[in-house]
Length: 122
Image (cartoon, rainbow, N blue to C red):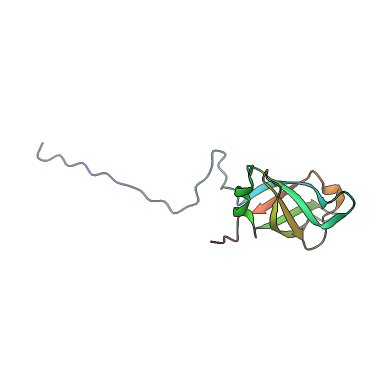
């Protein structure tokens, strides 16, 4: 067995890993627009309550603070967007408050929003 030398070749890829469907990974998390922040008497239209998919505790919301949120809706000519930012946690079950550049429309309650996983803060 003197002449047998086996070499293990390791290939390193620098491409983006694709998931099972063959698509690149999503760069956002889904969130549901639950309604506006409110008290018994007042409603604050400039603050939206969101429930982010997979976030079930107040401690988990710290990762999403400062992340950008976008509400995408269909318009006459293509799609339009309303951008906002996650500002604080809401409650103990993983809800968050987001503020938007212009208030979200009430017809969007129950709609899906995108929480961008960038910018990354350390």
